[in-house]
Length: 589
Image (cartoon, rainbow, N blue to C red; front, side, top):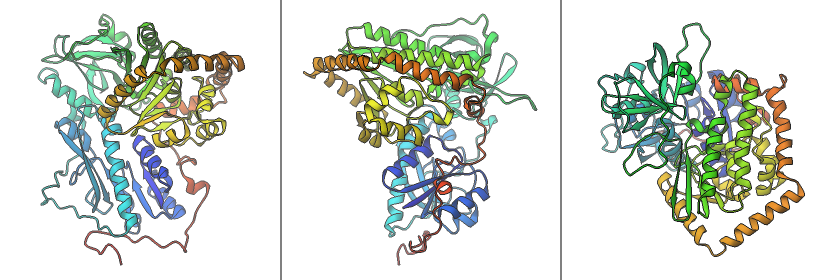
């Protein structure tokens, strides 16, 4: 089937729906909703069987939805309506939520229902829930709706609030007054709910040291105490702020710009506050947490038998110079421990997206900071590649892109959750890329496939990655099931009688590779191009980085996504037209 995706942004949800549909043989093209005429032109050019809006913040024009089937993916259960669905769910403490695929009509989120799925809320931030549980449910609902539509016999259900399974309601937009925190009266759990519901957008507007900031992300702290509202400590770029009954950690801030002043962007909280934190103590994270202890840690290490688990979680998946160096130190610690296998990755959500573009943009010399950052992550990759005393497993619980994905490929094995989205390319940021990818990627998938993946700049499903050799194992299920299966597989790897042979083979392969072309040569060649990317004023990297950091609206849909603009299909009279089916109509002639 020919499917056009109309989306406000090519975000993780749009990418996943795109990749999952394409993986099932559908012809998929993308049009960003940059205006009514743009959408109309995209529909005229592509002549789709079906239009799907995975993430849309504006209405589809009536002349489109009245003439063609348009499916809206709404992140709420049946009957839920409004633009702040997840925000209200998190602040209201909902235990279960859902995703509904409905047909566009004149009333927002009130169209006929093609599919709906539910899930248990994880008690995490909005952005993490959206990328994980919501995305899983959305793909399930979209695939079911597409199957029903293609079959031609299914009749969508009208929205009927009298039904017991219609649990949603019309909700207003969630505004800053709804999110405001009263530090003198609100307990930590209420504060956390507001912080988590505003992550990663729009943040909670608040005042720190007389300056207005948007606060992003919230993590509990059960030991530090102080006067409500005050900053008690900082750690790993985050600040700890007291509540009436405890404290919360806030990892990121964005200063609110004054009217008419330049735009601002999100930064680690300590970097955003700068000298305003003078006198605030740095409190290192405890190396281990006793049962029930709650605090904020970006990196942790634990052992179970002969398996070491090196877990990390960086906001947005970006890895700054300091974070890469801390992760390298943690890996060296794990390497010195008497374990046979090191499992490397977060417990859920992003594995990684590579260098930290926001921190780089804020640096006095962005080119120099880019250089420090790429060398720091290269050092980490080199340590993993050259560890011949243990096997390293990259556990990709969530999305990975660019240098973050190439970091995973340095491991001996890459195990990926079935709901992840993989983007093995750098070109859209104007970069050649490093992380030894010119060594690891062709070794896994072959030279021609490596070239295709890095040039196509399209998302890849884990199943497709498994078929190509990009990953070694795909694990179905939610984040908890993924963690359990990773632990079981790691224990099996430790007990495998072939373990000594696997280590010996790794050492032989590395020695043979060094004889053929040393790892240092791959790194030098990659960094020679990256140095130009970073410093040459004629290179696009600086402009693309700035547009990404400041979230500048694109002027057009990138051509690698809009296949209807590079290879116009045009109408095909020989292809039978799809009938617009609505509730109350017969489903088939």
